[in-house]
Amino acid sequence: MIPPGVTDIHTHNPHAPTGTAIVNIEPDAGIPADAPPGALYSTGVHPWRSAEAATLWPRVENLAGDDRIAAIGEAGLDRLKGAPLSEQLTLLERHARLADALGKPLIVHCVRAWAELLALHRRLRPAQPWIIHGFRGAPALAARLLEAGMYISLGPRFNPATAAAVPAHRLLLETDDNSAVSIADVAAAVAAARDSSPAKSN
Ligand SMILES: [Zn+2]
Image 1: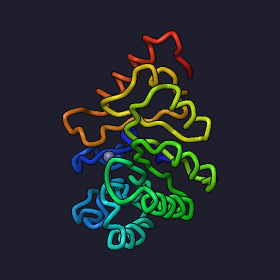
Image 2: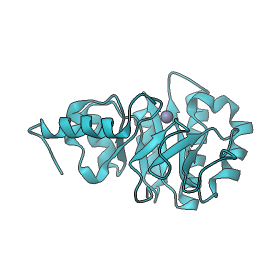
Image 3: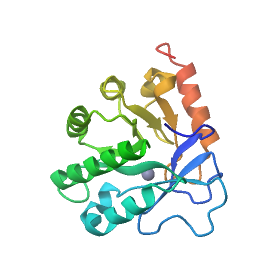
């Protein structure tokens, strides 16, 4: 699972606080040469770059075993961008198998391909958690993902009713690509949404 002490599970900000954030790096960029001690990273082929999988995937495989790589991804499915969905599915499956082989969680990007994502999860039965990052969906969709055993990560933009409905032990937070917002801001916004809802759950 996510290393203890990490509060921001997914950011693209290379200057995010060391040790409490998992900084996403592009596989062709690699771990920065000046990475501070204790820095944590994730890497994968983003679905938007899935057409470049032939060159990027070997880089992911090379990097993934590094102790500083705390999670695999982001990887996933995006019906609106990238290679055809069938190719994205093959690529996502590779990431999921790598995540399980290394015992690292998978950070998932999913846009308009929830049925395909759920079907792949059912087929693979992964041991490692799949974390749906930047989730903006409604509680009903969150419920289907939670029922499958997945985790939900909320960022600067989220559905307040979903924030209130996700059990705390399946809820994660992130700043993603918004470097103007701190993880404390995200946490405060999510906490406010949970406190103000009669449907609050723990
Ligand atoms: Zn991201």
